[in-house]
Image 1 (tube, rainbow, N blue to C red):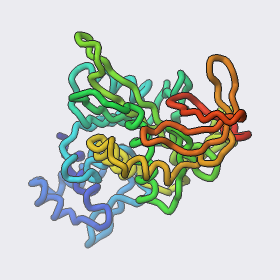
Image 2: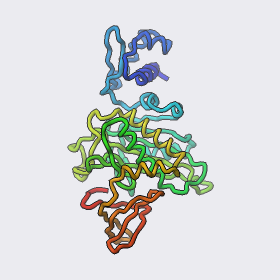
Image 3: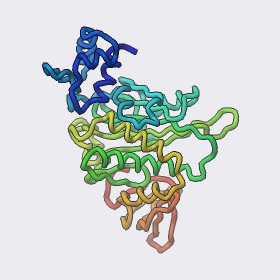
Length: 325
């Protein structure tokens, strides 16, 4: 690992304090000159580093480049050694993660990108992924046996995103069934869960959980069709490395307890669906209904206009006059 990566790892771990050049040199067993060169190299890469005489170095609070070191420093101890890859640009983190999973990438592998050129949402929709303005990440989950309620993985991921945002900010996001996160009436996160099948058995071998969070995306940069629909957490609202680590840890923690009541209870508590008038399409026909709840398996419980109770296992719904799904 290059010396600058070692220095960055220490600075990320010590974001709340200055680290002297001497401490860096002794910790990494390098010279003070090597420390200085590493800091200069990191600054050239785009990291903002405060250097104060008699205090040392510290990452500026506004320094928000996605890095392996930054994500790893914020992961809980049990996940510190997970494989983490950060790409400058890629077509889609989910597409690349599916390739890694097919090549036997281990459980918990995390893939992130500063920019996606072909970000994907559900049902073939594109996900606008401008450079440096969002968190675009995928987590590989390895299955050792079948999952009775596969939709619960998406439910757990949505809850993990909300909890991460709540922990790191004062924001209170809500969930639009089944996988979109909203803030102040605008979508700030989408989740795409995809399966990787085993060629020989035909069974599901891995699940890829893709998460796209709009962190600082400005409306004037959005395609016209997304104006008034897509929002953002806000400038300086959150450090993306910390957010990535919190989301990944939340997804991995939940994966071992998908049948537990804590997940669905947490999801219900953050749902914006209850009591809402919605419309959805089935077999080419549009239905209107009122949401009555969410089942233990994550299905949407609705009552049709004719009084018939219905359980939506999948699909897209429109809330009232809400544009965009």
